[in-house]
Length: 149
Image (cartoon, rainbow, N blue to C red):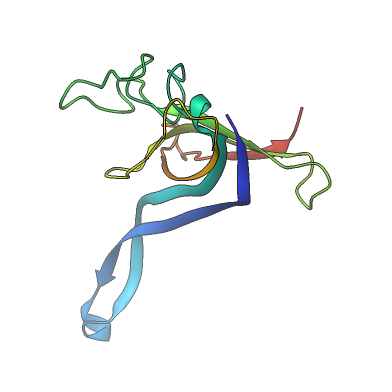
């Protein structure tokens, strides 16, 4: 859909439940792993005409394959297959040339504002923040880093 401006960032943090015991007072002794929150942040340089109409079934309009059509209120993103794959390839002549990052299940972060100027040929930079879902396996896989085919 476009080219990234200044690369992208992978953001993640652990959800943990502290274990507190009597032998150290109220000090945290350990943490029970309770999953990860994973996000991809990027700014994409895209022609606005490509970012609007006709972009159904992609990460930038994930609610429906028809631009302008939303999802039913209360519907689930992953259970209803409204997530999208996001594939980021390293640019030639860069330190990540030939590297491909594949995020199998992504969705625009909740409450993120995305602004498109439709029917324009101008090249704009549009910031995106994607939530990355795991693949449902045990242990879960959030992304795969490999070589560009």
